[in-house]
Structure formats: structure tokens, C-alpha cells
Length: 540
Figure 1 (tube, rainbow, N blue to C red):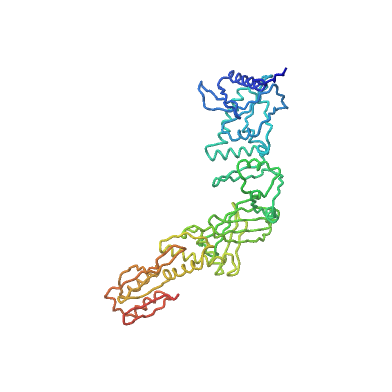
Figure 2: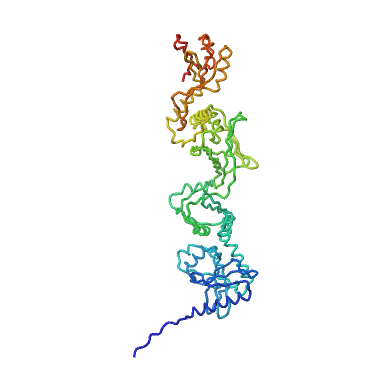
């Protein structure tokens, strides 16, 4: 006689408990009215959804339910606990619809709920969602399912919470993220900026917060500068580890951490101005930046967007009764001007003025101030040529020539990277400037003509000729020779003054003297006396 294998029950205990729990939930909702429960098939991760009914009509406002039924539930103080698979919790974290986990004691006929997305957002050490297979969810016993008014209030708050968590506007998203992080660690003031689709978090402690960090690599000197002067320290991702800093753990699931900056809490915006002494109308260079305080003194880092000049000042702690002696370091970053049109270079006139003054040994003054007062003012007494503002003199002078050419010829090329400029670039600019703007003249032709190639001398030349009874007309001549300004081709044309036929008998020597008198730098040469041809050229 063979024994018959016993089959498993068609309806097991878990199915019976689940049906009993669902019936209880349906009963509580029915007694309150205004709710409709719909089962989800298949019920993967979500057992059913509940929609709010108002004035007999569905509102489209729903929340999802993951139900956990037990024959009995024993509270642990103010909470009950429910073990959940983390793959379920990760799914809920990305769901835009509110999800409630419901724990039901079918024997005592009591149920409890927790709004799971909010619970997950407040979860310390969120890495556990990825590192563990299960996680214990805590459910407050105060959240009773038979307290329908409290459930309705929680539902409305959950709808608002999810709308802000997955908002339609950037501002709402930022506010939601700040609120989430503040709830995790209220010891910090939190600011969030979004630049080029990248999030920049700013954490400022409201109180003394002990944090231990471990930094990879040799960062001894940067760390010393941070502690002693408050110099910001930039750290690439993966080079630093923190203990007791839950905010970093909270933002890791949001996206990869690209970089981290440590900076001093004590920081004040300050202004720094430079100008040429005894030139009240001279353009000034105005820098802005923070002054930070450390254990050894203060540090100022000043600059301006699209300005190649950067200034660093270090001072010991300021004392009220005697001035402090500090050090000033001036550096130039010409990449700030790369790609900007030549005639639109910011602060060019001011920098040119300072550079010219420095090379001429003039005094340059500076003033270091903050809102409501000034910290210090003084002069830069560097010897001629040793001033930090004299360093770029040659470059600024060449750029000045290029700008004058661009203005005269109505072209406006973009400035290439200064490091890419060649000797040929500087030679082209110098040559074109000399030909077109430094007074190159010629008197040629059997009918006698005067070429005028400098606008500032044009009026002088015409007036001088007119005084001697010489009249004529202007024309533009375009020779085949071309010039270039930073890759932009320019014509090296010339303006010619064509004399009337009645003037061709004018005394050649007198004409030469008239033209020569236009500029002391011009050299007059008579070419071909028989043809009455003269040449007046600039000696380059």
C-alpha cells in the first residue's frame, strides 16, 4: 500500500490574512465614505490604490497601498515594525504617486500606516537601500487606519509632498530639496543652486559641528591655508571621506558627486580699487571678492568676471591701534578675454591706463573697503618697470593698436587665446597700424596727389593745402596688399587728394613744405623732378 502525498493548501494562511486585512480597510473607508479602493492586478509591489471621492465624483487624487497583514502585531513602544525588501523601497522612492505601507492586525482589528516616500527621505545612511536586501520600516502607532480624518489630512499632505518632490518648476524642486535636507540635519543652513543642469549644494553650520574627514593624497599645504587663512579648498570626487555628516549621504542617491569645496564660515565681501594718482578722471579697476579669516590672519581674493586681473592680499589679524602690514600678489589670466570681440574687451581702458602709468613710474593708488567703511588704502611704490601692472604693458599696447585699427576699419574680430598669439600677429598689427594710422603719406603722379592715411591728420592736411590755394577731391585707393587683425583680413588702402589741373603748376618746393609741416616725423623726398612727382613717407 503506497502512501498518498499530501498537497499544499489552495488557500494558505497568508492569503486568508490578506483578505481579512483588505476587508477591514474597506470597512473603515466605507464607514467614512469619500474613498474608493481598487485592487491592482498584477499586484507587483503595490496591492491596491485608493482614490478620493468628492461630491460623488472621483477626483483623480490617489495613493498606492502596500499592505502587510499579520495575525497579531505587538507594538514596540510608539512604533510597530515591518521588514521590507529594499527593491520594493527603491521602487517606492522613484514613484511619483504617494505610497502608504499599511500594517494590519486582523485579530485586534487595528491597522497602522506610514507615508513611505517621506520616511525614506528622512532615512539616515540612505546607502542601505543599495547595500542591504531588507530594511525594517518603522510605523507610528499613532497613525491608526480607523482615524479617517487623520488619514485624510495625511493623504492631502502626501499629495503636496510628492508634487514638490517631483515638481513642474525649478523653484519648487529647489525648495523641496532644501526642505528634505533640512529635516535630515537642521544644524546647517542649506542653499541649492542649479547651474548648467548641475546642482551646487552650500552647507553652512548654524552651530559648532564636529566632523571628521579623511583626505586622500598630499593636501597638507592646502589644508594649512584653509585653517590659517580660510583659503577655499577644492577636492575632486573620491578624495575625501566624512564621518558624522549625514547630509552628504543624503545627496549621494541624487547623483554622482563631482567635486567638493571647503571654505571658511567667516567671510565678508570686500571691494578693491586701483587708479592712477593725480588723475581723478582716469578709469578705475574695480575688483570684488571675499575676505576670509583663519587662525593666522585674513585672506582676500579679488577679481571680476571677464577681467584678466586677479589680486590676492594676505594680512595678519587687524589691530585697532596700529596698521597691519600685508602682502599683495597680482596675477593675470588672459583666458578671461578669449573669444570676446576686440572692441568690447571689458575694463580695457582702465588696465591700459594702469599699465602705462606703471611703465612711466607714476604712482598707483588702491583702496580696500567693505560696506560701511574701508579697511586700508595706500600706494604701490614699485620702481619703474617693477610694478605688477607693468608686466602686461607690451601686450596691452599691441591690443590698443589692434583696437584702433578695428575701429577705423569698422571690423571687430574676436580675440583668440593670448597664449596662441604669434610674433606674426604682433608684426601684422604693428605694420598695419604704421601704414594706416601713424601718418604714412605719398605725393605721386603727373597730376600730383597727396595720400592721407591717418584720420587725425586728414583735416590738418586739407586745411594746409587749402591755405596755399590748392584744391581737389578725395578718393580711396585699394592696393593689392592686405593686412590682418587676429586672422581678420583688412585692406591697406589709402585716401588720395587729387589736385585740380589748375594747381599742377604749384611750386613743388612749397607743396613739399606744406605737407612736411603736417607732422614733424615726416621725411620729404623729391622723386622725378621732370615728372613733378613727389614722395612723402613716414620714417618707420
